Length: 302
Image (tube, rainbow, N blue to C red; front, top):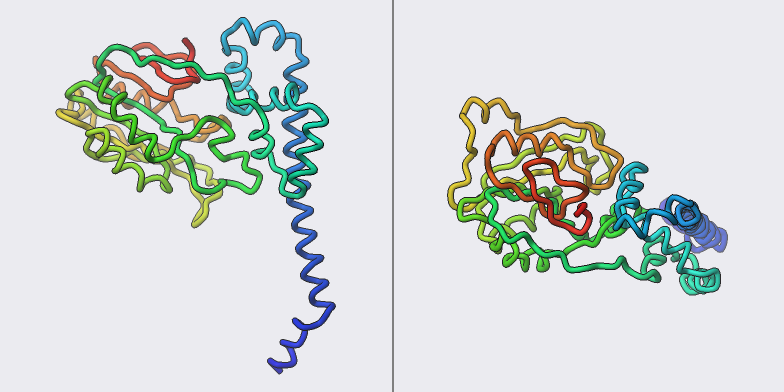
């Protein structure tokens, strides 16, 4: 019976079934990618042709796009590439890309054809801080989704392990002798945390868990949490009383927003509670710094 069943693999009919099944999958993936590309081109056109964009984008030093990105739930980088796609990549160049990439066309490959965002050197504050808070732009080894819309590099410039370790000089410049660090990471990047802490001269202490309530796709299980690492050098213990410390749960269940990588403000409040009357800085920050904080990053308001 087994030998009889195995004979189907040698038939022309089976080969045709395999080839046509593969073709269906390839065509479906291509259509989904094409739809995503068309969506971003339409988005770019909608923004670029709006009178408000024409009036405010150049004169607001990027604030208009930051506000728009926040209010529609996308990153500034995504909107930047969408507008560049519409305004810089002509029909001829787009047709050539489609011809060259064929069924392998993707939004990421379109991004590679576009000019990168303008960057300018941002100088670190000339000061020392007792509290560092950061959400590093981790580089991942694989796409986080088949359409690549959740991949960090489609939302902001990312950094690999060696680049993050090489920030030792910048960290030492701003970290006081007695300093505590709160650093966000995800489960796949836990193996990067300890080499980075060692390079920066910090010791691991403990962590908070952010329970996002609603699970998201993962490679080994559905994922609904991120990790806030607490590390220190010198004296880094909280500066509040013990009763206050014990009143703060190490697991915080807070719904995730639609903005890529945005962290709940609740954790900033926890840091302020644990370390009152201290100088605090957030690295890789976005938007406008709240009272009592200094922001540093290419997506924060001046």
